[in-house]
Length: 150
Length: 138
Image 1: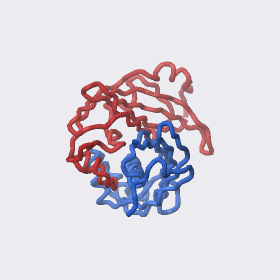
Image 2: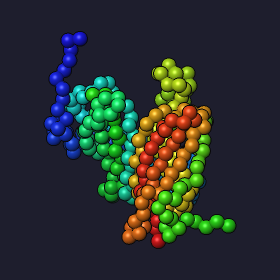
Image 3: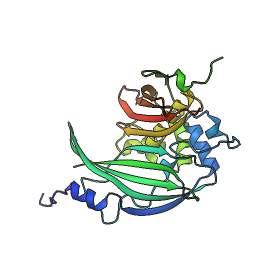
Image 4: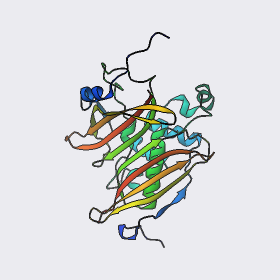
């Protein structure tokens, strides 16, 4: 093929990129979307479906739909093949998200590692988005695992 | 009349009742509108097949939401502090899927439990596995 690239050393990638902020965005929490999301998930708890409930708030994973402007930093090395697949999401709920909140998200690379199994070696790139409300309170952290074939 | 499940009712190994969520095209389309996730692979069977899927697929973030709703139904009033899902395989829109869960740890001091969560596709494959940390207010 003649176009093989030198393998990327994951330890060096981790040292260079983990923890570096590379994207910033804001998201308005609209009551209609919060209710529609919860109901489409089969939610019956009025804390998530009734805007008049005293403790009305977003469903736990609501921030997972808030996408950063960039998936990876501009200068991030090409690791593995293609765009990769969505390996899953880990959501930490720190505090309730209320209707009308504007959330301010910062995006970092949280981890880069590999695993070898029956289908060969796969590379995991973990993108982390941290969401804070207008008071600066951390309300949600979403880790998105992107998986690429090594 | 049943009473709301409290932390004191829960024991290691307890299982959540099996749940069969609605992943019809109508339900998934509603979710995609709410999530601003209007990709054809989620809301159009033919377009999904053209991308190599067996049909339209349930968004991974919706499957996580379905699991969260199951936890809330099992323990009304509980607070999900963390939910971590791994997307292992596609779940097809308009199929029958089954969600299960089990208690794998309890922490009396924090009134928290750990759950294992699973979604099985209609053909028996495991589509999603996950864990959740759930808190029970006093």
